[in-house]
Picture (spheres, rainbow, N blue to C red):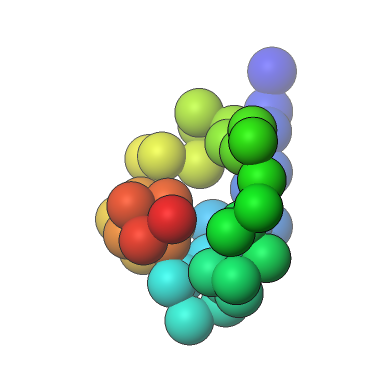
Length: 46
């Protein structure tokens, strides 16, 4: 399998609107995106 993460690998906390998650009961995050340090910081910010 040759997965290309593309723009998702550059996801950063600044790209997320935290207010959009405020009323969410579930947030699904792809585990393979956890590999990139900047994407990891974005996930932690939620």
